[in-house]
Image (cartoon, rainbow, N blue to C red):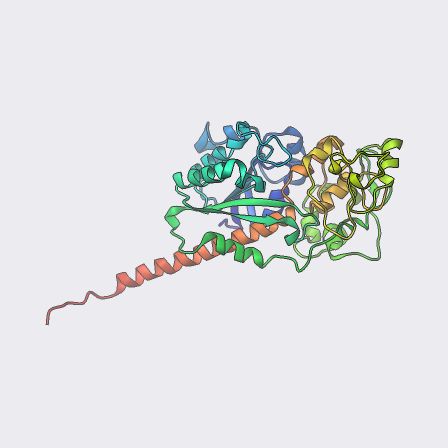
Length: 413
């Protein structure tokens, strides 16, 4: 733990910073982040100006000048290493290629864990990883962490909507603690019990995330006057700049990119839509897909090609492929695609988080991100496990000290 009272952490595969945002809100101080993509790094730096970001391949991190790097970024005693290696090789909609080079990036994650020896690690990915090739990668990952001294490793499956994200996004999180700490608890059970404390009583809907945002949009790179609204959902109060609610206080929001900008609504722009497509989506009812359209409009093939969000349910998964085609993310009420800001809201990025780069890159960053509110729950559960671990170690040390102080009893009569 740092002198400022915060637990220390290192972020790998940081992207634009969704995972970091939640982990920081959970009470961790991120000493260093690593991200390869220069466009995601631009957004990260804009929103985390005080966090050192190492822009480069994670494969190069802590390979050369290791001791100097550890000293420079204060990595001598790290509580948590966290991150989400690229998932396209495992994803149901990705390549699902057993030979995809991204499938073995967990070995770079484990190499860094082995170097830094954090008390705990969190590694996020898609659930299909557990099933791919009859669990090959699941088992290889657990064996790899056992090999480096984290045999107390396991995984949990989570759904983002359970933790306040207006999106049914399912993920698997691998976690583990050091063998030398000898934590005498079932790690999965302890982590899931901690997560249970942060579940929301019901799932937020798309309308609860978006209904206060303007119908009109602006060209990419421009901003709007911040919208006023009399009726706001609890989720909107968490997202908006003019409210403090839960962990999303005004101070938290102002600590991000909005802190150096006028109080405006940023990133509320979207891809242009052709008249033919606008006519097609006008026939889509809320929550419906292309197979609901008249046969003369669509033949029913690949029904997910066109989908309108349902206003009274959580969104389906926000994906990086939005940057190529937004036809699966039609606004719940309007005949247009959702905007970058609306996609961010559905991922639980508050309005103080400002995305940089082209519209294409912004959508890609959002789709690739770990939702901050899910990350917050994971960070809080991690903190609870670390606290339990610390208490157990303290009791164990006290027990040893007491034993040493006890007088030696003679058996002689």
